[in-house]
Length: 53
Image (tube, rainbow, N blue to C red; front, side, top):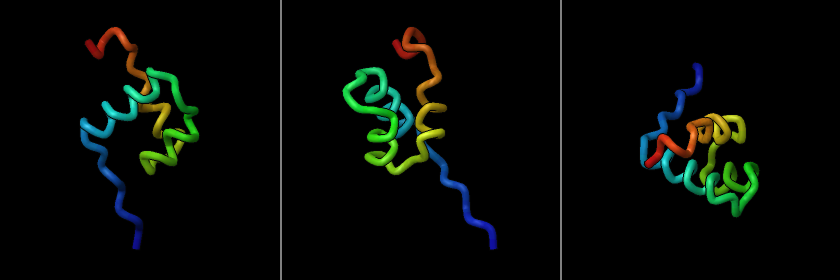
């Protein structure tokens, strides 16, 4: 039986992106804190910071 894919809501994506933009932690630290894959974490932060305003 295949594993169910996790669905990340907008609130979690925004929280991870804001934490990454602040630059206080590394990608690995953010991934472990928010329980996501480091590859997923960088995918969530691909949005240019100008479009978040």
